[in-house]
Structures are given as structure tokens and as C-alpha cells.
Image (cartoon, rainbow, N blue to C red; front, side):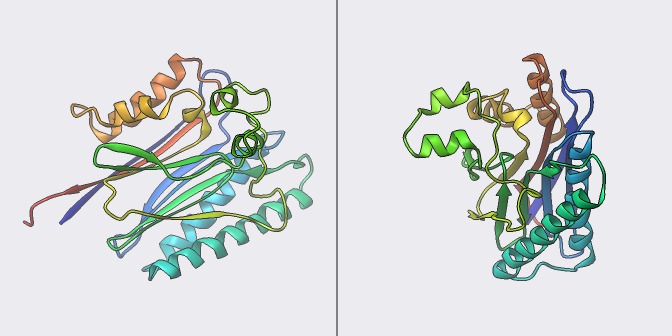
Length: 251
């Protein structure tokens, strides 16, 4: 049998005055898991509204259903609900003052016994751990990543590019919502979702090293990652959702 452990945490960081991230991990009655990290943006603390709307909507729909169904059902479920959230955020921005620029990134994963699906829009990241190696699944929808893909700049130049935080896609940005979907290897031992507050502070190798520390519990690993970010300056909100699948003997 597979034993599943989860932990999630968000931290304001050392620089920001408030936290615009939202994060959760939920389980439905069929032992299926939904993981979500949303990194909000917009003036007058409206980023936290957009990220909260996203997590609340997805979470409510997930816990209301006994199962997400087949892999194709799960993909369609994510696409449909993400489109609904996008419309909700746009509608909120039009109806409320000081909400210009309201939006959020989203990285989400559905984990069942049969499959793992991941989706993202924006620059929050999703990873899968397999055979003690951390693999990045998602690609950031940023101007800098477009420049890297086009061969205009190197990945090294991208790390310190003055426009590295300019997003090309986000929920609430346009009426047509383009979200990427990924079919993740179901043999993956763990799934990590995070906001860019983690990936801007630590390299993938540094994240992997903490996650592979045997003497730490799953909770302690997430807390240590956040502490490391803050020790390096913590210049953004940091949010992490982590799920580990461990093989165990039948009782």
C-alpha cells in the first residue's frame, strides 16, 4: 500500500509587509489529493484576494466531488475550473475599486492512485521527485523565459535579468486563459509545488538536498526551505506544498 504524507506552509518573507500567496492541500473521500499554490499580484493588497479566490474555488469544487474520475476527466476538471476562476477574478476587478491589475499565478496538482496531473499559469513551479532526483515539471510564463527559449539570452543571464519577474500569463490578465497541463510519472515519490519566493532564493539542487535529508520529517523539510530563503534575504512571500508517497506493508 502507499502511505501519503502532506504538509504546506506560507511565509511573508523578510521584505514584504503582507502575504499575497495562498496554498493548500486537500483530500477527497476517494483518497485523491489536490495541491494548490497561488501567488497573487495587484495593488492595495488585491493580490491576496485573487490567490484566495483561486484556492477557495478549486478547493470547494474538489471537496464537493467524491472523485475526479479518469485522467481525462481530471484534466477537463482543472481546465473548466481554472477558466471559471479566471472569469471570477476579472469580474471582481471590474466591480471593485482599486482592483486594477488584480491577478494570480497558479500551480496545481491532482494525485490519485492511477495518475498525477499538474497544471500551471504564471511563474509558480511544480516538481516531481523520482529515484531521489528532483525534476522540474512546469515552465515559467515569463518574458525572460521566452527570451531564453528564443536563444536571445542564456539561463545564467536570465537569473539576474531586470525584467525576470515580468509575467506573460496569469489568471485575471486576459479573458482567454491559457494554462499548461502535464502528465506526471505516476511512479514519482513526491510532488513539490511552490511560489517563486522559493525558486528565486534557492537553486533546484539546494531544494533537492533539503528534501533528501533523511533525518528531517516532511514538516521540517518545508520549514527548513523557508528558513533558508529568509536567511538569504527573503525578498518575497514563500509558499510550499509538499506531498510524499511512501510504500508500506499491508497491515
